[in-house]
Length: 266
Image (cartoon, rainbow, N blue to C red):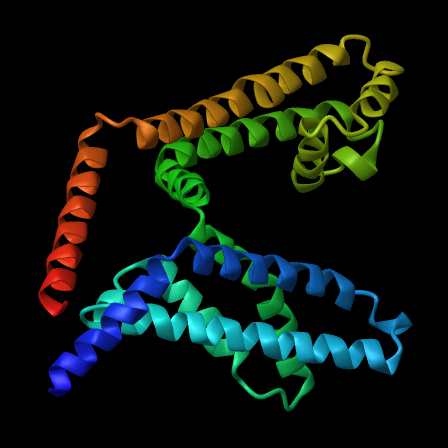
């Protein structure tokens, strides 16, 4: 009898979890939470009433998130299955930290940071966001080699720049460390013409140094990084990829198991 009651209970929570309206409601609450975070940056101009309303809103948002996590936990056949997903662990952590009482300035800072990170819960609800994040993480090993080569190239150009331009502008080229910071600014295309024209007054062909550096970093290497990430995203979205086929088969199997359980319980 107890098993049947628990099974019906889990069946009800499963239906709630899979309900599109419930999902849309939680996403709406996440967006409201993000808007509330923005409002709190104007706390100095708030009247006590507005501050009180925001506090009530924060309690409401925390309660909704807590109920939503409980629903998702109970809907699982086994509670531990919930924690097999990194996104579920992230959601649970954010909600759990939100329940910690605020007793000090450090706790207030933590609470403010948690409110900001609540917006990241959108990732666990929107599949397209998950694909982007997971693709970026998958691309890190390949991108790291490009970044390593960029660091070596930065160091070489910084050494050359400190030799050629240290007397022209010690503030920018006085040593390798300052030169690398200057090159980082140049790679962002922020203020590099001023640096180039300053050096042209002394070094006639210094423009070659800046043009070659910008072509390598702002065009070649950046496009290589973007290309790697796009390639990973495209592969993640290919329906006929082996990884995606395995994932789809796993999802299909899980759905079949859920359907069988629902039929058995009914």
